[in-house]
Each structure stands twice: as structure tokens, then as C-alpha cells.
Image 1 (cartoon, rainbow, N blue to C red):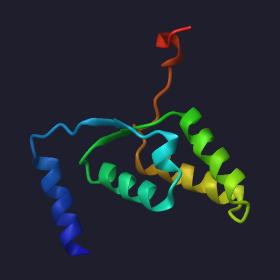
Image 2 (image 1 turned 45 degrees about the horizontal axis):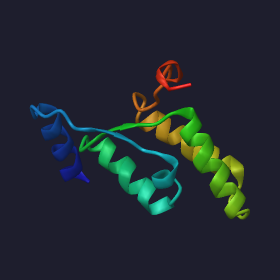
Image 3 (image 1 turned 180 degrees about the vertical axis):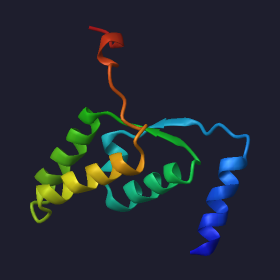
Length: 99
């Protein structure tokens, strides 16, 4: 695990602005893809963005299609994502959407 700390420190010193990527429900639904994309954002390969509505959509779809996963676990995953990437949640965008 020591190399991870060195690698992360080197990202902090790079003059690099990662691209912004909106993670929609389609990519947050599958477990492995969600984990991979969150790790990419944690490693600053991209700046992840999502909304509470996107979280609601993937959680609703996953809980409807797989009743074996407790909804509390999905909410915990959402909370961990928001904790790991506190700047990812987008708000106030509704005003610029077409009516």
C-alpha cells in the first residue's frame, strides 16, 4: 500500500486538470463498473459529477431488479461515494434545463 500513497502524492503535484465526467445511472448501476469509475475519480483521472436524482435512479433500478440487496446497503454505498468525492454532487442545475 505504500506505493499508493506515493502515487497519490505525485498526482497532487501534477499540473493536470482532469476532464469532468457525469456518471449517470447506467454506469453507477453495475457494481464493478461503479467501483472502477469511483476509483478513477479518487485517483483524479477524472472529475466525477452526479446528482441526487442520478443516485435515486440507479438505487431504484437496482433494488427493483435485485431484491436480495437491502436498500440500506445501496444507501450506504451512495453515502460512501458522496464522502469519498464530496465535490461530485451537482445541484441547482434544474433552472438551466429546457422546460
